[in-house]
Amino acid sequence: MRVLAELPHPDCKITIFGMNQKFIIKFEQGTLEQSYKLAEADVVGGINGVFEMLDEEFIQQVVGLFGQMRTAIIDTYNKYQ
Image 1 (cartoon, rainbow, N blue to C red):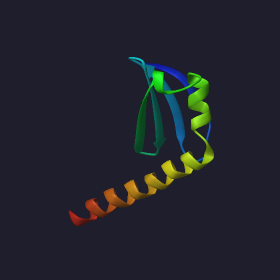
Image 2 (cartoon, helix red, strand yellow):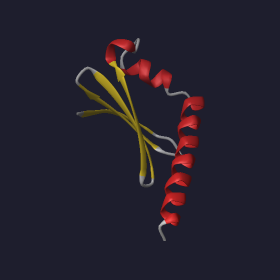
Image 3 (spheres, one colour):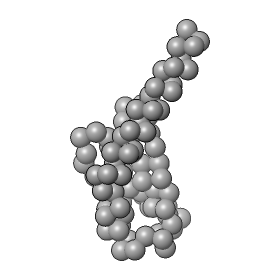
Image 4 (cartoon, rainbow, N blue to C red):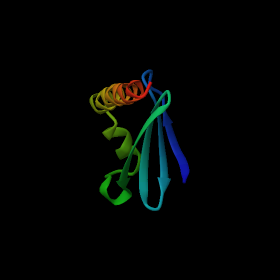
């Protein structure tokens, strides 16, 4: 797996990898991470097509999911304390 690009964003770290004819888009926020895999053949324009897909609306949906993930793990952790 090789790093193709890193995109600066104030709410999360975004890294795009290439591996086995797939783009892997990884979002990180603290100890949480999300990844999305796309076949290179499904993305028009290669890596530039990935950049276009990562618009602010999508990124804000990802950030919202981080909030849900954080709530889920805190709630689960608190049940066992």
